Length: 363
Image (cartoon, rainbow, N blue to C red):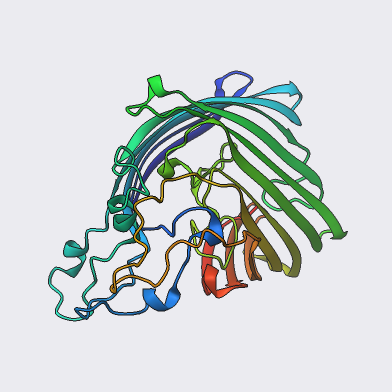
């Protein structure tokens, strides 16, 4: 995998307006893909850990490769001071999708060879992913919205709220495809002081949903936040539902939430630098709220022997996918924070565990 990224964030380029620019080329040789609509997409960890009929490992069955070229410009300006702001922007997403290059990964190896089995390949073969979406596509997003922010401290707030609302329009005339859609994004975060300077409670609620049009499958997982937060992939994993597999929760609309208790266990000074260590406990959850409609007419009634027993369960009830766990946080001078989180999936259908190392608190 590769991250090639240049960002620029300034409130001086245009007087009175905060400007954020990004140019990225991001490659994922094995990006998570489990299907659509949450629990309707059956994840079989036993199959993932198995060998195919030729003795090749199936552990990349729930993966495909993606190359993403992204360029964006976001702007924010005051309405009622810094607390209430408008936002606007434009972004281009150029997606190139393909099966995992198993031959390249197997090259030079004599043991632990990987199978060519691929859920993405099956979806394309059976028409569950339309032919004109299978290889990806380029889309330009036009964005507008509002932000209300009363946090007392951005890196680790002890009081205040941070709420944002965005409307996205992706017109077909700014795409190399015929797809056009609008999407609504809403995120609310709130922070409470329990013990001044020592312990706080934070929660986040977020919703993203399609309003009109048809959204290609490869544009569904992206999670949108206001700058300088970067767009991330899918519900599940380090940025949303810790412990749950990344991209486990994909649909035309989805919601997720987190609640986290944070408490400092040490505050000290080292070499004239302020240092603190904090612990946290969290509960995360997410679910599909708006199903993605796709054609299953060519799905075989009986799957081939080299595939999982079931890949789609149309009768599955969608309920919250839950993850829980704890973390430790090392902060230097209040604003540089290294976070180590460890999450557990509440159900085996959503994964097992995950270790996540990031900068800053999750939200």
